[in-house]
Length: 165
Length: 146
Image (cartoon, rainbow over all chains, first blue to last red):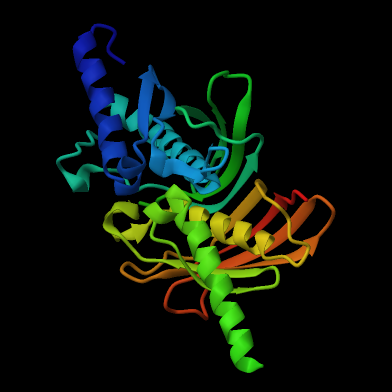
């Protein structure tokens, strides 16, 4: 780490790497998922949209949208955590314009969603925690909320196969 | 007699298709009801560019498979002879066996194999055009409101 590295350079390196990671996934863009970054901490944001509704009578978010949002959050967090050292040391510089520079994403082995309450027709947020990450397999836990951080509307655990080589 | 049954089946599928068509997210994914039976549902959807999770291979994102499985399981609960008024997902686990082939339709089949007064137990399988080789399987529990 270089203590005197210019702040702008640090921010631009991290932000462009995150953008490259996220923009490489068409489905994430279609759902409208974005990521807020504070240092290495990521918060996924799913802005509300009519097409995310699964129960028009209530209305409530589609369970599949919730699952997709949580799974995407887990995959990006896992990939972000795995590439952090290489990114900070300058060994890699992912760039959205150069597809080959993007790290390969982990593959989901299984994913279990616990639906705690119905998703309201408003923005949703999620944070993932890498519980264990080995060379080959990883286990990730994700929490999602809307108005109150302590009142989760869904949580999930998943296992992932890390990209090799 | 057989004609009558076929007609009933067609009516059920038409009503279920209207039900699915009223769900904005199911419509956005182009879901189509292919078959229904007591506690059973088959729903499929086409491959599309914007649903891709791995652009290098053009493979649909796992979340899309989750949405299809969830909708299909919900439909199977609603088709149960106990006729619940409504349902919501309590828990859904998906196991991903292999990547769905780019360009091919994905079809989910769900079965409600047990129903209590308030909980429905489901299993589902998703395939692409190679229906002998599952893309994913799911097990779930759903609420059953009477």
